[in-house]
Length: 266
Image (cartoon, rainbow, N blue to C red):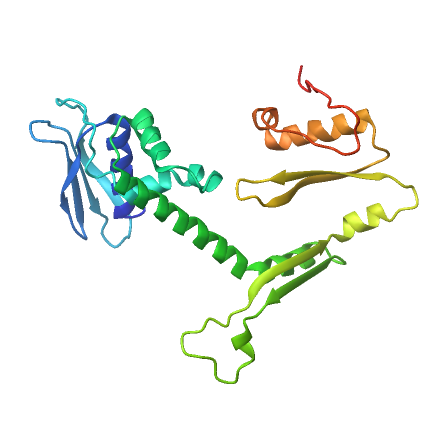
């Protein structure tokens, strides 16, 4: 069963790419969709729309191939590839096109042209940036949820407006919507804990992502900055991020005279 026709087509495309078969859609309309392999091969998959439902069902198929593998998959669209490479491009928006071509060849044994690689990268970037834009549009919802779930907390949002906003009649086509500038968050539970008369120190893990943005990952209030408290903090960080991720991280601190090689799980 598939939620819609596109879900079935994406499934067939993934199968074609991973198996290296020259599959294409011989029939595709609002009620039926049939995928077949290249001429001479008996493989096929037939799916149709359910009555009085939006879902689609695979009703018949022949699973065995009598053809050789292909290096050019016609139904491997740039849209499918942009989703497949989304995580990689998100981690490194400046990735080279040749790296995408090389990755496609090593992972699926398919040939990718420079033009298609460029289209794939641009579609992925458009999706990523669009997603970020949607999140910023909901920044006030995020602030409201923080205040609802953490009564007594402080959340301050500051925006910047274009100069045309002050005009009585802005020029046609001018975008006068406010742009996010900064946000300040002080959670009440953390504030009360830090304001206790018993003292303590604040340990934080700050990350630096591929977009050169600095973001807080985790923080803890401890009795003092000691080797034991740092190991406790890093063990908890390992549980959250995973040992494989931590192993490739570089730790920098202006409070320590030496760099410790902590084999936390050994």
